[in-house]
Image (tube, rainbow, N blue to C red):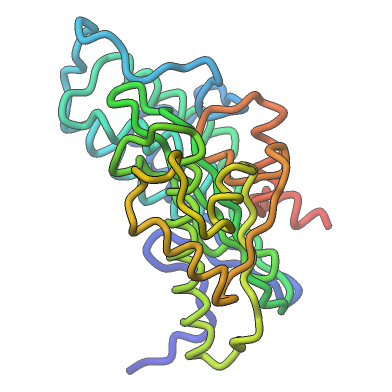
Length: 294
């Protein structure tokens, strides 16, 4: 074994320490992506995907000829989401078309690169020693226009620092927005309990500490807190009802949050510029130049 001292670079991740805090980014990796496609001098844009974008498109759209190039780019973008959760939704959508990408998808991917070129020095900032676990859960009902499945998303913060996030299509088609949100709560609960148990093993968390999950759908919260089955929930898979068990067993706490403050919303759909930038900031994504300026 060899002591390499303080970690600064590993697998494309750049780690900088500033006044006892950490800043993690992938600037050099992003620059190499742009250079590979000769896009380092393209004009940057403010959001990775316009809020009016509709994916998928008509089947008669012209196919993109270089499938290997498309797949290579999407693979690189997936790795970039390790420190760039603001890219999670658009990369999720574009990765659904790796089998037969259209020219339209390639153009969308290039727009993502233009957004990256304007945010090269952005990364995740970690500060403080608070170990409070708070998660935000959200879904976009029938958001996938290809198969009408909903998008589940969560963001989990440890002491105000983003440690886990997800943007993924649900396995089954929900029949209501309540069901879609409830399924997303299930996914979020699984992840936050796993993180809690990891912290318990590290002896920096106690059973008395209660992780909080925040959601903006009142119907889903009512269903999670109400142990009585009714006509509207009979069809929901039993596996999703374990959220109730965890609430009753005081393993998690469920709270309401307004849609405008539910940061998981960023991972479910394209947003307007001002909303997107607010959510991005709330995730802890900042520019390195801003950090140095402080």
